[in-house]
Image: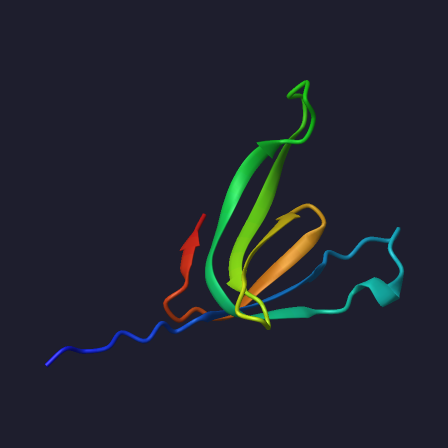
Length: 91
C-alpha cells in the first residue's frame, strides 16, 4: 500500500517596508498562498559590483497554477511566514 504525499504549501505575506518617502497607500499586504520555497540571495545591483543587496526570492504557484518566482530587495520589503508547511526556507 503506497502512501500519497500531499504537499502542504506555505503562506507568505509581503509588503513595503516603512519609509517616510513612501505614501501610506503603498503598504498594502500581498498574500502568496501556494509557496514552495523561499531563500535569501546576495546580489550585486550594478555591473561595477560596488553595491551588494540582499534579495528575497520566493517560488510559488499563482492563481492559474503556473510556477512564478518573486524577487524583491529586502531593503524595501518585509516578509512574514504565516504557515510554513512543507515549504523550504533557506537563509
